[in-house]
Image (tube, rainbow, N blue to C red):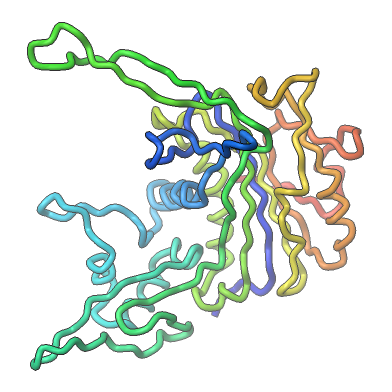
Amino acid sequence: MSEIKNRSEILFLYDIQNANPNGDPNDENKPRIDEETGINIVTDVRLKRTIRDYLHEVKEKEIFVREIEKEDGTIQDAKTRAKDFGKNKKEIANSVLSSCIDVRLFGATIPLEKKKKKEGREEQEDSEEAVGTEIEGKGNSITFTGPVQFKMGKSLHSVKMIHIKGTGAFASGEKSTKKTFREEDILPYSLIAFYGIINENAAKHTLLKNDDVKLLKEAIWNGTKGLISRSKFGQMPRLLLVVNYKQPDFFIGDLDNLITLKSKDNMRSEQLRKPEDYQIDISQLIDQINKHKDKIENIEYTVDERMSFIRDEKEIKLDMLDMFKKISL
């Protein structure tokens, strides 16, 4: 059984400086920007990849969704990956849930191979349900709905994209005297908000554990801070807020839409470059928390000391607020 009995909501803010937080492969890998509003968009898949990489590479946890190279140099597909965990549907489902933290968190659709009958007709794998959980999906697949889901991330301000050109280290050809050129598109600055939910009902089917949720919070914060490849370096976590409720099936909702960015010194949104250039107005968020405080167990948070918050135009510290509990990650 799952250890998660009640719902939780997640609000995560991080920023990026002079980099590309999430390139669009259908648009020359440029940062994703809403053309009408200038808002920077980041997919939930990008955040989940950050979390998975941290859990696997740093915490040495097994994850189902990862790139595995076979002996012939090709990449393992999902059906082959499923075979790493068993021979039939029941065995695979049980083994994946017990082994893979990312499936317990985010769920998965696991395709299975079909057996062949002697007369040539296809026969489905054993469809018996896994012990302690429910297998969705008919025949040749297993589907677990993930209890942890995120909306698309969005910047709290409009951004401006910059196109950069530079030279490479190598010649453009074997006998060429000229070096290759490189081009890329970056954002000088973007403060991005992600909103998510931990659904206690879906947690029953993936057997989500309290320790899994603890690692999720650590991975959101430290995984983002640890993105130090050339294309991702420059990202920093700024605020992680987790609202834990006393009862199932209730949540405030859309926490990311209850905060606003207020720039200082009449700066335009495109001119922002660092946390000291703005404050985060949490007035609506606190109003909603106070309205539903009888349903809230506590509010966990960790925050970068450079962040500044206001309520009703007055600066406020999070540790001054009722039910707010600072955590270390």
